[in-house]
Length: 395
Image (cartoon, rainbow, N blue to C red; front, side, top):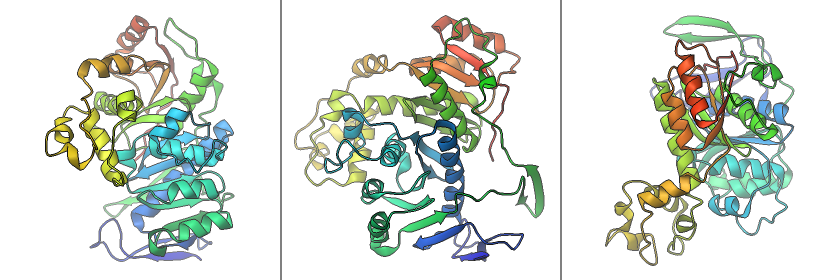
């Protein structure tokens, strides 16, 4: 198949629409279910590049949850703790021996469930039964993977009354080294971003007093940088234990990226607070309502779900609020977080905000006229920071 007609482009008024290979070769994808659209394919192909690179870099199965051409979550397949299984709503029917690919997907989807709602999923390895069972109940537009087991395919092809988008991609496909795009009828050309983010040289320049980057921190910073490589810029990514826990994408100001990603990281951590884990939800509450309620309960507008006449819609009994003091004390317990930035931090205010969310390790390009201020702020908190010399803008 050399081309695939699409229903419409980014919006229903943008017709005609198609994907095709300009050189006349075969498309490297096969649609096994549904009818993916223009944005679906943009998400799928960007997400596939991300998980493929994570797989190569770490040697572990990887997964990504994409929305509007940026990741809402990305992770590698490390085992899940009982707490993570709880906050990611992994069913008990999937035992502790859940596949590594399923663990990666649970982490990628679960880190920011609000942003992942209606996502497009990418898997680095074969989609197996465990992963398909995790995908089955979620509100999602589709999945891309190099292959699917027969059982997984049966599960997914039954999703959304048979309309769920399932894309199989040839893992051997490699695009041309020069890429093109158009804007306003003008064609842009550039070499593809093939920067190697596994190179030890990324940690050769450590200007901070603390120069210790444990192996787990190097892995997490590598995950952060690879995630940023496929995130709309400006962007910042917080990572802990093999998964992105906060991604700030597409902001004009870097401090706003850092704040947005930090807020998401804080919410991820607060979801592990005993009060949140033990919220008394009414039986049969819809998944989207449950996720939204948790998000509001954690936030400053918690009265929206706790006031009389409101809490009865969600809970069997009115929960006690999570106070500002309790939140601050809990967030202070989050440590050993890694932070990547797709370009240099212009001022130390980014480090100040990152420190509040437990950041201990930083990788950023360096090169600001105020690098001295950024370094001094890291030294104030004992943060180890590497100047990678690599910018990772993506548009």
